[in-house]
Image 1 (cartoon, rainbow, N blue to C red):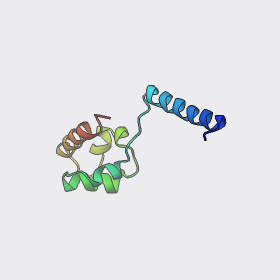
Image 2: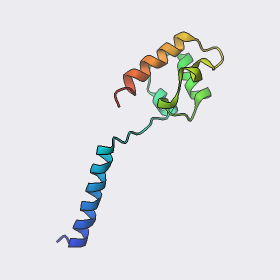
Image 3: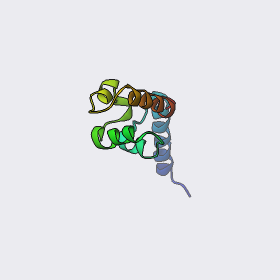
Image 4: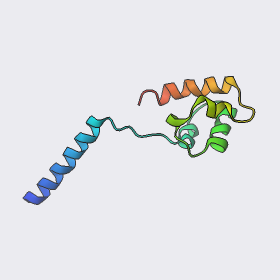
Length: 90
């Protein structure tokens, strides 16, 4: 048998969940985790894994990519395409 106290606690959790959904809270994706399963060029994967590291994909700007040594516009375009396809839908 469920007691009134247990019911009220569960109801509070459900209400908090609904508030979270309505507020549009989005989670961010770590760049290292994002690039692990990505089928992309070696240059892009190495740049993110070894040089960008613990940044969130949503926070990476084109300047962050272009500031990396030996990374050019081709890798930047590849990053932007993958970001739009995977993160853009969240």
